[in-house]
Length: 113
Image: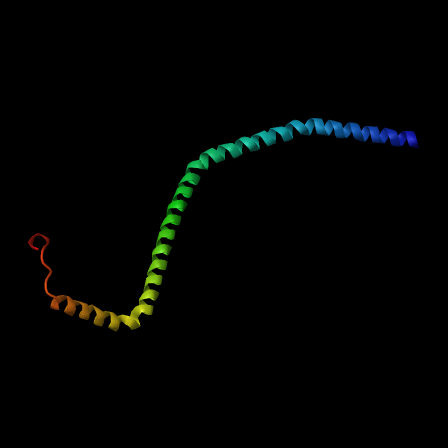
């Protein structure tokens, strides 16, 4: 019984080795073909990937610029809204400055002193 089990195990091992010897070159060939196809498609689509990256970078910069402008405009608008209540005082002060500047006697030129 033990000898026949050893014979079956030997036959199974020989069958597995033959299967591996037959399948290994096929698997290796498929692996090489897959690697070559990946390389070919990488080179084929590389210009499109580069264009996409450049367009993405350009649109990203335009988006950052527009977001910065909108943010600056929003901050300026909020600042204007905050300063809006003191606008009458600013106008009165500017008017008084113009009145007092006009009422002052003109300064003598440098060469005629």
